[in-house]
Image 1 (cartoon, rainbow, N blue to C red):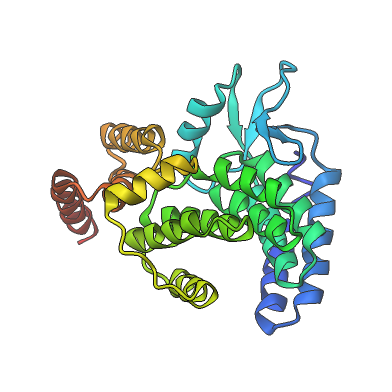
Image 2 (image 1 turned 30 degrees about the vertical axis):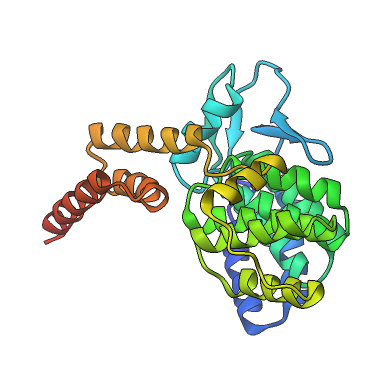
Length: 295
């Protein structure tokens, strides 16, 4: 990436943000599209991943270092564990993945679903562990009524769901899929399970819709019953323990490096999903240390 040729990109992105905030979304999309075309012209790096319609894998080996566009340092370790790169992994000088993801979200807003699909795929190639890009791509397939691809991408997104809110989103996605497939039992359990993780109006409204459509109240399932129904329909009953373990380990590494702010980020994510008392104690200690350091 020739950063000298791209010196004005951040300024142009700031211009995009001003136009977007003004409400002129079509003009904002044109500006962002031009920025991305400029980046493509000046970029020949080996991206962190490649993608066909729905399946993501590590980019083909060609001896060059891999470049990844991170949102947070923990993604570096998640990528290393899941994709097992055979060479050096370097970070891009510009947040290219974020730019593509932002463009994809804007195209979704404008109902330009094919453009959004292309943008989210490119964002994923720059960062194959970026959950928001997977969820955005799934939303494209939802609007395009491409249910098989919607399911494939949602299942890939699951690996990177590491908070109560994102797990709830996973179950809402699966609920939508099963409504579309007329599997109302699985759909009801998915929406109910979603609310256990993080209650939303969306899940409540979908449950009410199913009650009205079926003329039948939502059954009061036990947790065991719900987990059995999830298992029968190949829906994961909880977060991916491997991902949670990686994030916890990154927190430990940051503690060893005395980077307490990043350590707190990691441990707070793990605590959010596990609610372990020991982690709450550690987070309280980190908060006190950070407060003392800033005093």
